[in-house]
Image 1 (cartoon, rainbow, N blue to C red):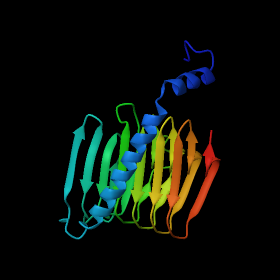
Image 2: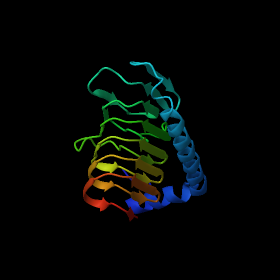
Image 3: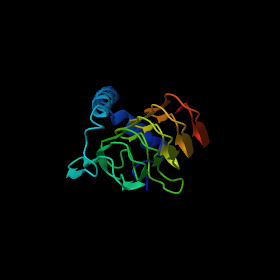
Image 4: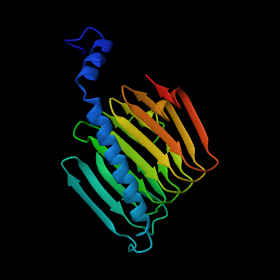
Length: 212
């Protein structure tokens, strides 16, 4: 129900008027700066981490999870309600909201993946994924690997009253989503960066550099 609003547009306008966009954008800059610095320093630890190390704990703002290289051929992880995920180079399958804010209690979500051929999200999964800020800040840095990015709506660098960033440094990657993805912002900022590689992009509509 939209009560007490007459239309969806009235509701959206009211939300927009209540958000401190200057503070939102400043917080996104701080998160992005801290994440980039952390990624560069973590790269130096890749060869020093013991195999099969896993640390996971809950905070009031989401789960923190750190994974070193494992002996598993493919590592599957549900990233719902995550504050911070750091992976040291596994071939991962990320399900759920990977690097995406999934609730008001999860205002920041950061994922740093230091290597591996990873798969993010699913075309059949409605959850926002891979660098999406819904009323918050969502950021993903993937350092290297030939990765597959999947999504349905709000994926791969999208912001709705928030800031979402996906930055893939290198690799031959594939991006596929239905709507509102791959650099899309509604009353917010959505950025999708890819450094190098022979990449493929597909979207049904509303994306690849869209603001509304």
